[in-house]
Amino acid sequence: MSVTPATARPNPDDLLVLLAVGRTGRYVSAADELGLNHTTISRRIAALEHALGGRVLMRGASGWELTDLGREALAAAETVEAAVRSLASGAGGARVLEGVVRMSATDGFSAYLAAPAIARVQRDHPKVTVEIITATRRASLQRSSLDIEVVVGKPQVRRAEAIPLGDYTLALYASESYLATHDSPASVADLSRHPLVYFIDSMLQVDDLDLAPMLFAPTMRESISSTNVFVHVEATRAAAGIGLLPCFMADRHPDLIRVLPDEVAVRLTYWLVTRAETLRRPEVAAIVRALRTQVLADREALLGGHPGADEQLD
Image (cartoon, rainbow, N blue to C red; front, side, top):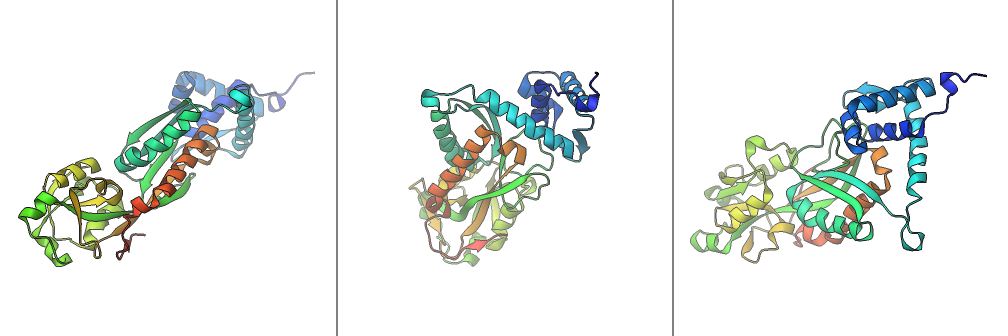
């Protein structure tokens, strides 16, 4: 008795290929993850569709998307993956996580929140590798090879999870040396006489960050501007002007003095974006939990520890 293609047993290797494509939405990214070439990925997917008797992937605006049959097959693939990984355990039978997690986040978040959170995960799971790309941008509309994106402001995404991580505050700071040679502004109106250290206006992609200085000082002239917030901090410390800085970064430097703390405090929100399929990977879920824990633990520093009148950007 011959088996028809629709009832043939799918190859577990083909299911794992579907898992990689389903998580990234791209054949090329799946090929990189599995150490295969693009042609092999395509052939494996075709074989799986032949075995299941239907399409498991369809072309979407943001890459390859799972069909209903594909989602059923993905659930089976996750079971296969879990069974394989269960064979690896540490002392006392504890589960050992492994794999590469790729994420993007802003410079400050990457350095002061992501790095310590990830280090704690790696102490328990040294086979987990995390690649961090620093960028200040909107969430990608096309689900790329990134597993996690951390962005500022609520993202508009499709077929992805958007999770609020926590708020942080932007405030004005000046160095002791700057204030020694310039009058400290006594009101928001006085800010027009001072240069602003901030992002490059023409290159800023994040609406909330773009609107922030307009709330209090649209007439401030630019001094040193950069796409990197660490440049903002160091330029402000070097007396280039008054910097609009994240409190959790500026407050680390005793030579920076907060200016107009009761009048200027802009509260923004970090959001985490990931695919639902990606979030089910144990190593990704562990990193996400660690990031949320880190943000909660640093809440007071992130908010600037000052009870001033906050401006909330929605």
